[in-house]
Length: 250
Image (cartoon, rainbow, N blue to C red; front, side):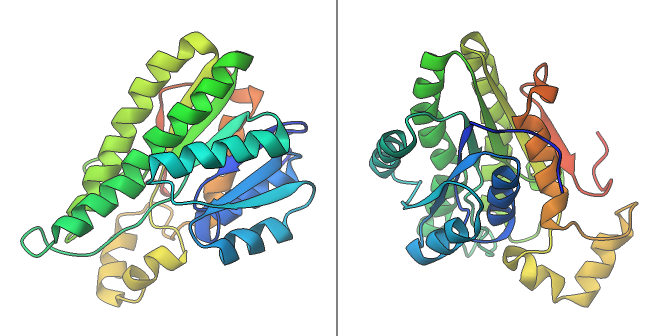
């Protein structure tokens, strides 16, 4: 489906057991990359890996745990002996008003959506620095821009933080030949957005602001991710690119 060539590359995709992460893992494998499939659920990680062409392995780890990330990266290096691409996709989206949100919900959202990207980027960045090249793509959200999402304050804060982290990471890592960019999807038809899509009134309002008049599909995100992983984007770093049918125009 995609013509990008990533033969010989090794890619780690976090949260790849389902949804956008699973589609990205499939796209990378279809383009010749060997994929390390991460998910906190070993069953979904294993299932995704089993569906990929070529060499793929699954790694069950909680990426919001710094020690677990270091152990996973060590295992990936033992298995593949290199790491060229990191896709920080793992994420959660709890629904609660600010007044009703618990401390645990707030901390967990920032841990999974933001701190995890720091842990994986730090570990992978040290490896990529030794090779003098690498690519990191953070899956953020248009929620990280000025897009109102009622009862999702922790999600919005984490994605805004991820966009900011992407830019600072790109500045620091450029000296090592590592490019860092963010992809900001709108509403994509996955399990995570199922509740939103089941509200006809809310969906009508959302669709009215999308010039293309439709929701996104996982493959709409995959194409951009593959471009960012390829040499075709070699002069592109520190960007947060919206994939939203035109809903956000900055």
